[in-house]
Amino acid sequence: MRKITTVAITVISFCFNFPQQNRCSGQNNSLPDTLILKTTQVKGQGLMRHGASINDPHFYPKDSFRYEVQVPENINNIEIASELIDYNIYGLRRSMQKGFHPGKNNPLVVGKKVDTSNLLSDRDNSVCFMKGMKGRDSIFIVDENNNKDFRDDTVRQVQAIDFNSNGNLIKCYYTLFNGEKYITKYNWISMGSWIREPGLWFMTKQHHTAALKIGTTEYELELCIHDTRFGFRDPQIGIIGHDGNRRDTVIPGEYVKLNEYLMLDEGIYRFDDLTNDGSYIKLVREDNYYAKTGTQIGVIAPEFTCQTTDGDTLSLSDYKGKWLLIVNISGCWSKIMSAEVYKDLAAAYHSKIDILVIDRSESILKGLQNLNQTDRFVNADLKTNNDLMKAYRPDYCSRTCFLVGPDGRIADKFEIFVWDKNLPNFFK
Image 1 (tube, one colour):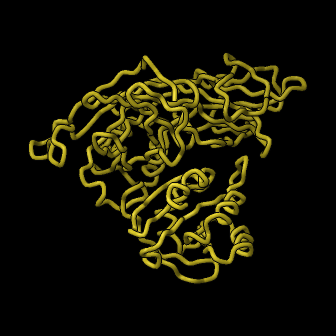
Image 2 (cartoon, rainbow, N blue to C red; image 1 turned 90 degrees about the vertical axis):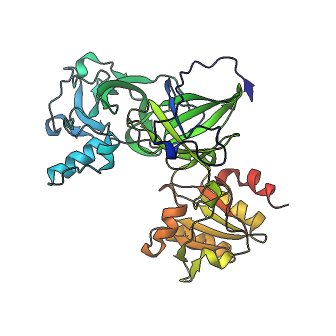
Image 3 (cartoon, rainbow, N blue to C red; image 1 turned 135 degrees about the vertical axis):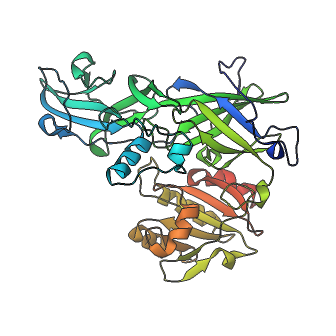
């Protein structure tokens, strides 16, 4: 860890004006019920990263693109693509076009995620990209000022995208509703080719930080967006600093999603909400954490029933009084494929704990089963396994492991790539 002496972050912390009976009740009356933290936008990826989480916009010939854009004259083979900014607006607009109008209890209306009186068009709710040929060079242009005119933007030669670098980022502007009004926001993106797949790919590269002080203890939080797009779907937060000591790394198992819990020295807070533009984080105090059911460390593990590749039916209750490791593997690309990592994990621990392996590929699961007859394997795509997937398969490309203790609680949660660091803490 390295010492930090200054943190350029603005913070607002206060209790909402709840009715008197809802205030400061619980085990630690000195803690505020609600904390509102102002975030600061930072260029580039932070400590909380998601690896190769990139997006491939669908390009169309200019004449087939759905709205008019202006292009330079000296570019050939022009194709245009767009990427939505706010999926809340897009989804609500589509629903209203089908005759479904937002009611007063709609969370997008109540939470002021969308201004239903003035929904942006798809044209205004998107950032556009252009690709083509300039001489012999493959080029692309990002509509950086979002005026649907590529003639005033920089022409760039297509190069391989660098997942880990924060260099050569492109700043682009767009419109976003912040809960009160539409404002101009900006983000940084990296764009280029990818060795594994054809086409032009992009990923946003920004993060937000926020400061929190409770008593004399100071925390630094980081906010990141899981899908590396422009909006704030699937936000996650994590603690990256504590009393001036900033961490060097934060692993995905330590990320906290919406409605999950942030563990502070003084108490536990639920990540309750995030404004639509990412400018404020809302945390709500939780006094009954250990009575909760979920997949965070310390809480009661969710019950499930599933069907294995052998056709057997299993439930969590079958493992009562035993250690169970639920292992997610995925064919999604990574430098080391998770199925190969599982083989090392199983060789070291299958005689010590029960292991349940989840994947979406029946052929991969069968191949692993031929190598290991003791572990159990589950196809994530079977409808009979929906409750297992809902609880323990957080993402399509998930590689998260959940260690359930003999008491039926989540003892640990980690990415499969660090199994050799986490499991020895429980088994010698």
